[in-house]
Length: 426
Image (cartoon, rainbow, N blue to C red; front, side, top):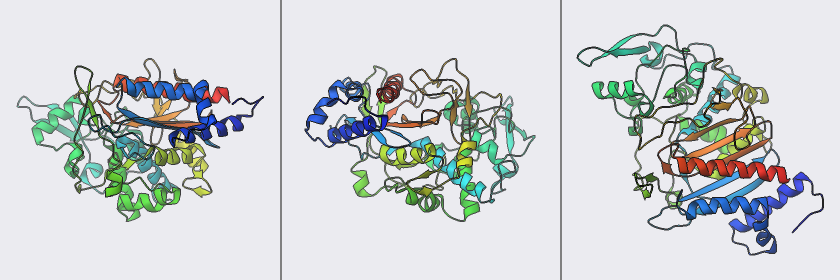
């Protein structure tokens, strides 16, 4: 099917219709025409990635501020079981939870219940009287001192408070061993009651900052974090498949995590056994679908509202999207646990900053994103980006370890490039 001088909106509408037809298995001439279009080429690239077992399966979606114009599901949820990936597959989105928690905190800032520059509420000694890890004595015992500055909400939202994750900090691995500090996936509060590794505001390091933001949201709002999300973000936006727990029906749609082995093959891991953690993690732990999360990123792309439902003010979203860390560089991580994460440097040679909840591309990305794009990911290789300049957002969900797996990152880059090719075609 061809159009003579089609408008951008017409092409996007056609793209969305073709994508939906193929996703539903509708054998129409329009769906058949898809193979000769930029849309069909993108389908072919993503399908090839699953056929070659670069990744077992994926769901990818993209939208402008007007329309959803790409939907694709390819491969399998589990290589051992062979269940087909579908658009409603449920994923562990891990640190993509952080943008949701940051949105909740900024709602409370809008209401005057929190301030970015004030010391955070003293809900725990770790926040009220933070200690900095200076090193270890000759016996291996940690050496601590009081932090020079109080922790602010801005510090927590920008990962400049001094907290870290042991998976990317060797000193904290040593501290955890010396003190029997549990790991974050245990869901124990003691796993985030750690010392700082530098004074607040001194530099950037990715860590449990947003877990503490979640605790603050609970304290200030008087609601458990999951209830706050449902009442103020998920419910209003119609995100029915996003939560910390899942029903049996949702469990039937849950994808398996696949671990990359030394020989490059992928091994599916057993599904987790549900348990009740000591706290709901603001930094991770949500389950969601690509469709639900695209709803969330579309809200941010449109300045805080979607389909008549306002979640944040436009000026708040604009603030979240601006560099909040000055000359400090962000976004690079060195692993202590190669099976869990690679050394992370998604944009080698480029300056990266952090806003109030996510990373910022200062320069144009290699696959099409504009300077000023905001972006982040989850440890199981779920990814999103929001490009305010081109008015486009994309979400791709996979479930592969380690984080930053080169083959998964290649697929992510191919998807992004394909999205911008579709925009050019329009």
